[in-house]
Image (cartoon, rainbow, N blue to C red; front, side, top):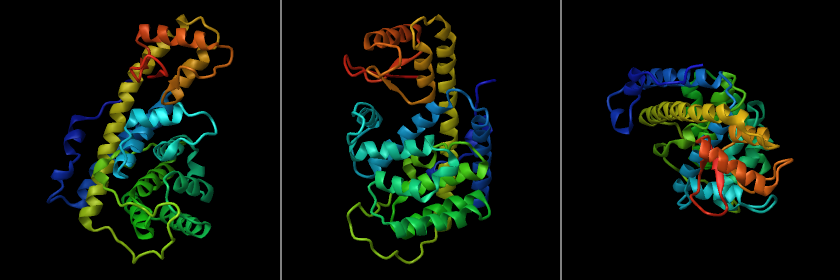
Length: 318
């Protein structure tokens, strides 16, 4: 299967923030549809490395969410917060943002928009909510999912969370979930959350009083154009990342038969299915020393990268 590439005409046609003036929203939506169509072709290939791809996009989305929330954690710090925290311990507010976006990437799409899932995401993003507000939100999303075009569905998701005061990060999460549901994907691909240009409207912090929703907010034409263009840019970046990770995954799979260590197959599968592995990960049948030696060999082969640059607490990934 050839590595996915973006046609040059499509890359030129996707507008940046400064290129929207004078463009009709339907024209921008047409270009975005082409970008999503190209992304759909990548998703439907169901490559072995798709889990790593989606989780890497989730990490990028979490870093954008953290910056929009006024936090200083970058992708490396978010990865550390989740991977270096012992199971059961709190990963902190920024780490929970990564967990929210990773939830989008790994949860079967049919379970993403349930009350349980949406409530968990609100909790991870630190947004105040109660059972009634979660139920109302999921009801709105069900109606939106049954609506017409994908553009209206995406802008509708943003408008719903704006109206309820939940913030744009949640709107991006929900819009990505709705898109995956509409296209029949098995798992969602984090897209809008990776767009810093999407803008941020902070939601109610957890613990703050639940206020009645403000008057209905409809996205104006310029706002809708901006969202559609952001989705198109995000789709192209996701395709570019898929090409990069496919080359790395091919290298890993090429050297895999040379690995003799017990448990090496499990390590290769973990590298293909997730963002990264900490060097102290517990792998059945493999000692800590054996795992470190395996990673050293994979790095020598050029099959994986050490992602931290540290002499200790090392983390490896495609």
